[in-house]
Image 1 (cartoon, rainbow, N blue to C red):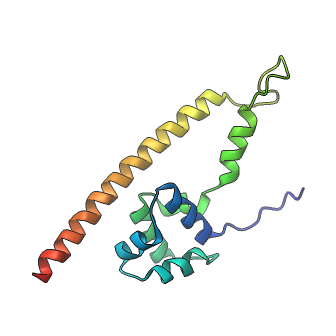
Image 2 (cartoon, rainbow, N blue to C red; image 1 turned 120 degrees about the vertical axis):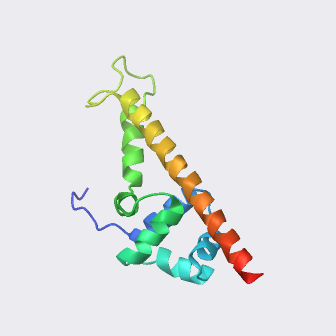
Image 3 (tube, rainbow, N blue to C red; image 1 turned 180 degrees about the vertical axis):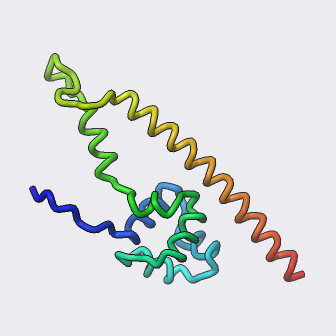
Length: 136
């Protein structure tokens, strides 16, 4: 197994976070004022320019750093280090942290992310209402 760290695929991270938010490409496209195909192209790109990344992050209710540093491996590592199949009397062998603490941290982080998502949704609704009122 190689220890080289491969560069983050920003588009793939955007896609995963969008999916975790249960948001379709169409919804993100509408919020950004672009086509669904544009979102597809962005999600297929290894890099995304900072301004676009900042916009997307805001719409997804996270910071650009969350997108840049998103790692499914971290989720799998937490699961792998806390799994107990009952075959050993020593639970969490070689675990260097308290899994419950990590779980609580994850819950707190999710709570913050959901609060950011709610705020982003409120701002999006206000923006769309403003657009609609200007068209009348």
